[in-house]
Image (cartoon, rainbow, N blue to C red; front, side, top):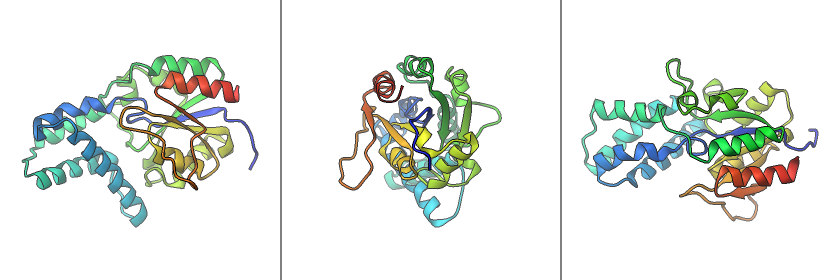
Length: 229
C-alpha cells in the first residue's frame, strides 16, 4: 500500500451533506416528539449493520420503512401507508446543510477530488443530491447497494478505492458519524468528522480517531487543506 497524502474526499450523504432534521416533522406528528427521529435513525443504523453481519440484504429505504413500523408497534402508534410514503419522500428530498456549498468549494479549489458514498440505494427517478442542488460538485456517487453491505463494512470502502483506482491512503472519508470514519480508517483511509449536532468523536483508546474534527464542513475543509495541500 502506497503511503500518499489524501487527495480524494469521499463524503457520506445522510446527515453529513443532507439535513436529516427535514424528516423530523413526520416523527413529531406521529409520536409527539421530534427526537423520535433520532431513535428511528439510530435503530436504522443498528439494523443495517445487523444485516451486514448476518447476511440478508434489503435497501436502506426499505429497512427505514420497516423500522418506522417497528417503532409504531413499540410506542403503540398506528403507522399508515401514507406515513410510509411521506417518509420515503422526505428521505429523497432532504435539503443540503447551509454550510455545505462553501466547504465543497474550499476543497475543490484546493485540488481535492470529491465523490460521495451512501448507504442509500440509487433512485432512478429522484437523486437526493440533485434535488439538494449539490450534485454538480461530485465526480462520482457510489452506493453500498453495489456490494450489498452497509457501512462501515470494509467492502464498501475497498469498492470506492478500486473504482477510483487509488490506494486507500489517498482517500479521506468525510462523515458526521464516527462509525463511518472508523470503517474507512480500518482499511487505511484517513477520516474527517463533521461533528454536527448530536454527533461527536468517540474517545476510546484502541479505536482510530479522525485526523480532522470540526463543527461544520468549512471548518473541516480548512483543517484538511492545512494538513494535506
